[in-house]
Length: 416
Ligand SMILES: *[C@@H]1O[C@H](CO)[C@@H](O)[C@H](O)[C@H]1NC(C)=O
Ligand SMILES: *[C@@H]1O[C@H](CO)[C@@H](O)[C@H](O)[C@H]1NC(C)=O
Ligand SMILES: *[C@@H]1O[C@H](CO)[C@@H](O)[C@H](O)[C@H]1NC(C)=O
Ligand SMILES: *[C@@H]1O[C@H](CO)[C@@H](O)[C@H](O)[C@H]1NC(C)=O
Image 1 (cartoon, rainbow, N blue to C red):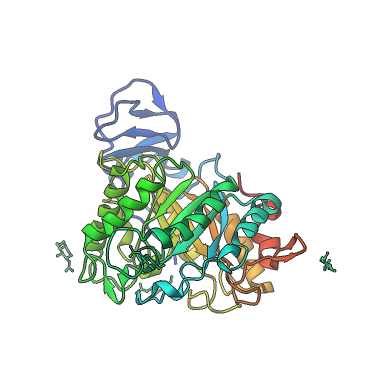
Image 2 (image 1 turned 30 degrees about the vertical axis):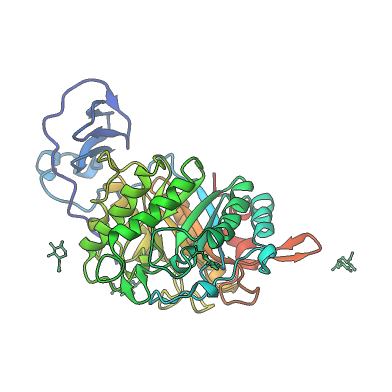
């Protein structure tokens, strides 16, 4: 399925002549004071009220008809990555365990958490991360945790000191490796069945939780804030965007002014339906307190099995035509970026083939796709269907085959 885009060809008039902005540079927007014309071969294109961008002028075959064609929506907006694309910013692994016990309904109890740290009788998550950085050249880890664990089963924004200290031990182990670390609130937009801001906990209490987490990590530049893992079956995506907005505002106001914040859409953050399902349009309205969108990154997941559930060891697609291509096009056309914080497959020949293709395509579109984070290591057993958990034999680590062939930056060479 090819995605065609009908937006973005408005506002081409009234450009003054100063210097010239580079291809893919900003060239307009309500508060923009820089160049508003583009270098030869590029055209300044309206993306939203805050952002216009220099995009390649329609190719030679259509140049003759430019005057009339520019008034007609076309499908070429954002179709071509810039020559500078090719190396992803991030590649990493989910270090799971603090989320264990969490159901897609948001049902969970604090006591189900299983810290992936030896001091709490779990797997050696710290050792895994050190290995992944040193031997595989990974540079990001996602650290899932349930809200119930952070507050010890109380619907509040106040962190339980005892439980948070355990989670923070994993965050600090991650930061110690020099990698970037995603705080992933793994609640499916819910608390025990009820949706945040739509019958469940209020946006205020959710924002208070994020404000407290952000205040704690405000000075850590390598922290990313993953607002929510896999929202799904949301009654109203506009209301959900308001919930996300409340979290973003709280994070910024707590002093975490520059770190990336990951914005999650509906349908389990499916990369495939992010645009068509309305999540993209709703989340595009979320801003920083200053009205800008700096550091606000779209959060998307995609598996490669037949039902996109990540439960089969057989992969059937590289997701390019149905997910990554239309998503990349929308992102580029709208001046946005995304991070693929969950993907993975079985340690099988079909998954090796398709994951390698997916990663290569993501790298070709690295201007808008920042990277990928595999699911999963940490406390998952080495025989778990999607296991990326390495084996430690007297200090010598051995990776799962999907990692060693496709996902490890040392193997694929496509991570900066
Ligand atoms: C924090 O959680 C622990 C369980 O890990 C519990 O024993 C303790 O009472 C909680 N603290 C507060 C202040 O509720
Ligand atoms: C979703 O919520 C918004 C904001 O309250 C409201 O304007 C809109 O009508 C709602 N949409 C639906 C389908 O209920
Ligand atoms: C959710 O996304 C999957 C693929 O990512 C798709 O197959 C499914 O139809 C989507 N469901 C909805 C309700 O959009
Ligand atoms: C690991 O080290 C122990 C103790 O030094 C030794 O007995 C064992 O044979 C080693 N195992 C392997 C697989 O090297």
